[in-house]
Figure 1 (cartoon, rainbow, N blue to C red):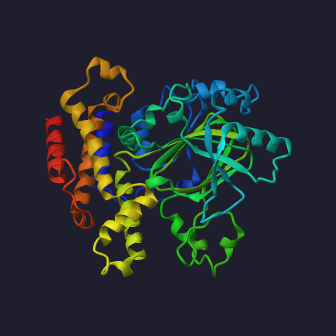
Figure 2 (figure 1 turned 60 degrees about the vertical axis):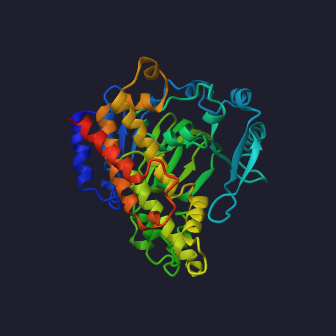
Figure 3 (figure 1 turned 30 degrees about the vertical axis):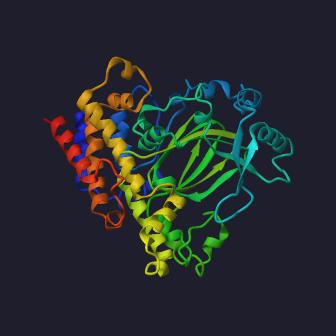
Length: 427
C-alpha cells in the first residue's frame, strides 16, 4: 500500500458507515473490466474497488499461468475429465441437487469424485437430462485436501485475507473452494458467509451473475420478511406476497467468460448460473475494508436469535450463552471467537511491525510474509480498522455479559497494545 492509498483509506473510513458501504447502484449497471495485468496495481484495486465496495471483472490474462487453466481443460475449452479423474478420482466431494429445494437451499450429499464425473459425462450425453436431477459439485476444499497440486496462485489483489489467515492458524477450516457443474447448474439467491467479499475465477466455461447492491435485498423480501429462493421466479410479481418488489432496481448482470475473475463486493446478494459446463475457483475473504460489515452482520444475527428465543429469557439462567451457541451453529462464529479472530489478525501485524521478517520467513508462503509484501502502511491500516471494531465489540452489552476470563490477553490490554503499535509505526 502506498502513502496516497493509505491517506485515501484513512479519510474514507473516518466518515465511514458500514450500512451505507456499497449500498448504491452502479451507473447503468456498469462493471469495470480490468484488461492488463502490468498496468493494474494492488493500490488501484484497493482504492477503486475494495474501499467503495464495487464489483469488477479481471481478464483471463490474470489466470493464464495457473496450473488448472493449463491442465484441467481440453484443447477446445471443456473440462478434462480424464486428467481430473487421474488426480482426484478417489476424493469424496460435496454435491448439491439444483432441482430440489429444502429450507431455501439445495440439499447436499457426499459422493466419490469419480462417481460425480461419471454422472456428469452421462448428463452431457443425455442432452443435459438425468433422473437424478442437475447435480452441482460445490464448496469443495480441494486446496486443503491436495495442497501439493499446482492449481492456482491467489492474485495479490485478494491477498489481504483475514478469514483464511485466521482459520489456517487454528487449522479448523478454510474458505477456499472449487465448484464444478454442468450447463444449467446454478446457485440460489444469497449473500456470502459473514457478508464477506468473494472472488470467483472460471477455469473453463461461462457464468451469468445477477448482483444486487447492499440494501436492494430488502425490496425482494416477502410479507413475512423472507428472501426469495429464485429472484427470477414469476411469483415475485405477486404484490400480495412480495409487496415491495416493484421498488427494487434491476440486478447488475455479468456474463463471466473462461479465465476471467469476478470480484463480488461485501454484502451484495447474488444468484449465479452456469451457462456451459463450468469449473471455477472461489475464495470468501474479509479484511480491514469490510470487517465492520462482518461485525454488523454478527450483531444482526445475534439479535435475530434473541428474538426467536426471547420467551425463554427469564427461566433460562444461561440465556445469553445459549444465544451465542445458537448463533455459532448458524453462522460458524460467536462473539468470543470473533474476538480471537481479531486478536490473531492484530498480533500477526504487530509482530511484523515490531520485529520485521528474517530472510527465511520472507521466503515462505506465510501470513506474515503476505503482510510484509503488502507493506507496513497496510499493516497499520489493518490495525486501525481492528481497533475500531474491537472497541465496538468491547463496549457491546451482549459481549460484556459473557464470561471473558478465558480471553487472553483481555480486550483492554489488546487494545492498548494495538494503539501503542500504531503510534510507534507512525512516528
